[in-house]
Image 1 (spheres, one colour):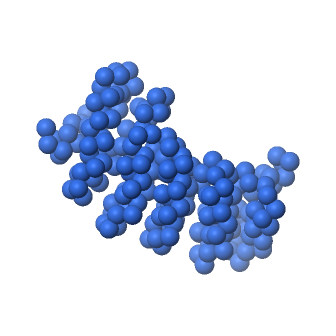
Image 2 (tube, rainbow, N blue to C red):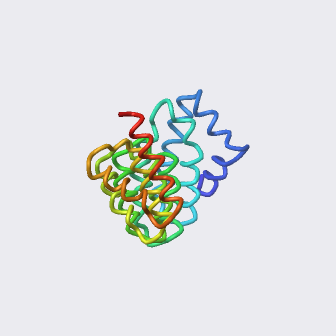
Length: 198
């Protein structure tokens, strides 16, 4: 079966492969092997669909954590020459990155250097950071970005990271006086959460 036919089979019947993976270990192994093959294919169309399939099929693997093997394969595409592939990689990491948090956090931080990927990468980082000190430093960095949306996401990231060090508190406190109302509101919400947990 060629890669396009393999993808057609994965996507058929409203994601039947997803549900079969939950109960059929042999099928799960074959789907994982297929996804690995698709994520290393040089054809941009195949790669795009393969990453989308990995993102969609995630639920079937939640209990087995088998998708950890796919995270590095997706993460390497965050630095692709093709902008669409970079964007799809960010979306796929947002879906499966929790299976290898260290790898996905580092890839998402690298992606934050690309202005076209910044908001999506930072949002994914908010959901995946799990208190990573590297991610917290990234949130500090973007808490002073020129765009209010990015500053708000960064403050939200500090809140979800449960960081309570002095530098983080100073960044969040400063954001309560931000020129953007949504940033101020997010900062107040995060500070209230930190105070309630103290």
